[in-house]
Amino acid sequence: MIIADEEKHIWGIHTLNDDLFLKEAIIAIGWKEIGDLFALESNRNAIRKRYAEVYPDAKKGNIANGVGMLYRFCYEVQIGDYIVFPSKKDRRINIGIVESDYLFNPDAYEYPHQRKVRWLAHYPRTLFSQGALYEVGSALSFFMIKNYADEYLSVLARGAKKVIVNDENEDESVGPTADDIIESTKDFILKELSRQLKGYDLEVFVADLLNAMGYRTTVSPHGGDSGIDIVAYKDELPPRITVQVKSQDSDIKETTIQSLKGAMMPGDYGLFVTLSNYTRNAQRFLDANPIIRGINGTELVELILKYYEQLSDEHQKIIPLKKVYIPVPKEEV
Image 1: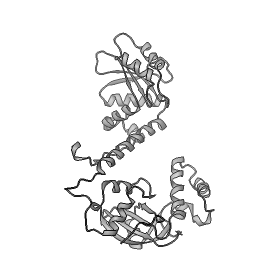
Image 2: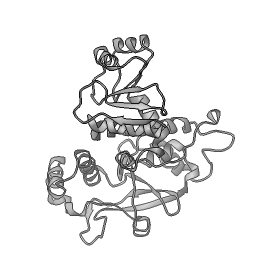
Image 3: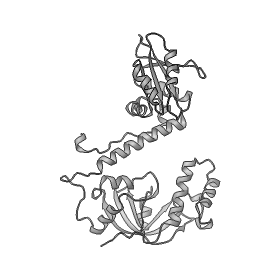
């Protein structure tokens, strides 16, 4: 029977070349241009410096992720650690043990940073909870499995004798997993808006979103300071909707919303859109003035998800999303 050793870690890894891993009994990661990691000092700073030299245009987030994976693969993985590899061609979960130290193969076409591995078992994905499958489906190429490590070792210990998920016992991880996916998507959208669309660019985006919702919009000239960023109509007739958009990170104050109200004409309705939220006084002002609707970052993301397919190609490229179906608890169906 396999017993978890506190000193043995369980790692997850992805590849685009299933045969390389399964037929040659290795695990490997890319970044060939980095060269042999053993030729560098054995610390993250040395790898980070080399990474910046090789990929001068890389973004900070990509550098941090890449350096972290290279360092872990080279120095933190130990012989005897477990590997969980989800293969795409047969949709199996492959579990093995690391059998060598770090190796650099300069002749490898795509994955030169390698370690030898002995595959212990190859299981159908149906043996694992949705939470375990979600964790091994990490966006990173190489990562440590933490939350569901015991489940993988448990399946390995007993083999394919018992299915964890069946008709009588609903997978309790389905709900949290679906929620995690949804929340991660919302976080991604909000971060991309904040990072890529500031000031006038966000105004143009909001106008595009309103168009997707069926409104006709006109964006005020760039640099204007009339208190109105967008004018919208549902059809050819009144009422007119005056829109102010703020991309600031701090919460919106009452005085800022008052500036929108001051710019409104009799009969107008107001819409205030922010990536952040509203202070308590600002929310009270909105509650006391129902002709002005306030939309915060969370509500904006909900609208984006609802009308995403009607957004312009330009803005879909800024926030690239793919429509998928995810499992939800049966009581929600």
